[in-house]
Structure formats: C-alpha cells, structure tokens
Image 1 (tube, one colour):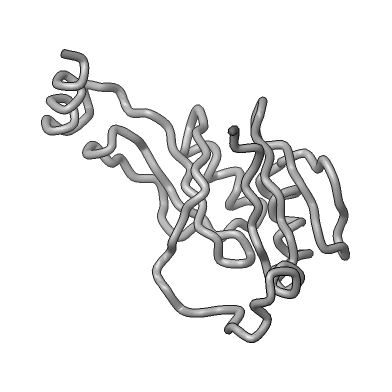
Image 2: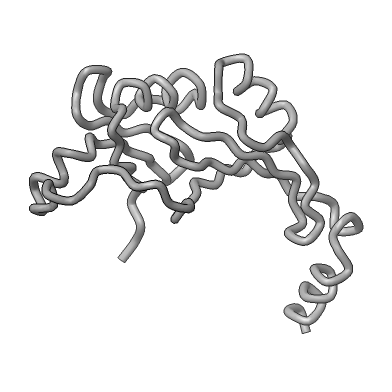
Length: 147
C-alpha cells in the first residue's frame, strides 16, 4: 500500500483553489475554480487535492453532523523548503495568512513558520538548521539513534 495524495475537505473551495494554485504555486493537475474537486502537484510523487466538504458528507451519510467546530488543529501539511524566510516573504506578498513568522526551533532542528489556507488548514514551512545549532537534547538523541 502507498499513500497517493492528501485530500483536504474544504468549505471554501474557490478560495482554497486559488490559494494552492496562486499563493503556494502548485501546478493544477485537475479541476478549476467553481468546481467541486481539484488536485495539485506538490512534489515528485506527491499530490494534494481539495474537495467540497459537504459533498463527501453526502456520500458517507454525515450531513447531519456539524460542518465546523472550533478545535485545536488535528493535522498540519508540512513543506520543506530551502529558505523559510524567502518562502514566507513570497507567500506574504501573495496574501498568505502567516500566523507565525519564521523562528529557529533548536529542539526540532528546524527553522519554521506557519500559515493557514483560506479554510483554516494549518501549513508548516520549514528548513533544516545546521546540527551545531540544534539543542543539546536533540543532538544527543541523534547520537543515540546512530549507535
């Protein structure tokens, strides 16, 4: 079994379509604004798709459940880049909702920033930090795993 792609179930289809096409610059494989489904190429072997949330609810019989709830995030889309700072700068110029400016996280060994798409989905943008800038605990963990 292999993971073919991630599908986000969105309420704001057109806004999300434009975000992933125009802000994130993912090439469209299938779909257009005003439709119900679209897929985007996000890597050599990875695709991301969006689908109107209510339509899948009809298929699986959950239209009686609330379509939205205020909760903590239950997932995050993670994209590795060469430079978090350059990527976030470009995304901001295109109107991305940056919720955390780039910071160094030595406990994780990455420079990281977070944005949200128009449907509120959480997206992490990161790049690796040099090992010498990692926390002592993270470097120790790496050493223990290599033994």
